Image (cartoon, rainbow, N blue to C red; front, side):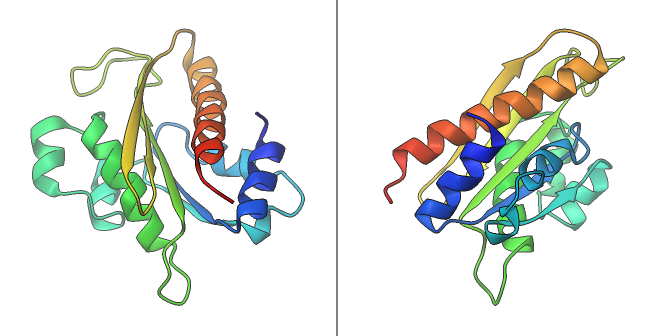
Length: 162
């Protein structure tokens, strides 16, 4: 599924989305808003590249970050939850939150090898995390995360009723 298909599926279902990014640095939200009409469903995005922002802006527990670092499945889940809240409009959180955190390289981070990525998805019903093990250089990994995130959104959207 392309970003175009995701945007149209969100619009058809009357859903909104917010994006929290670390290693992708805004690439995912940029991909989504490249689609004409995206403003109807994309609430916004937070690039929490610095680990401290994951706590101060997105509300990820400092204890969790201290214990596991930023490259962790629970951190991805909490980022996705947090961005829904941060991008609330009139007190209503975004219907979906998606987050990316991981290691694009060139060096390992938090004891995790290059290519380790966690994509978090949050809805009212549940949160889930997808672990990716990507290969390539820094740019290939970052682009791969965007592609895999779009694919995961497709999966989620096909399970949500209209």
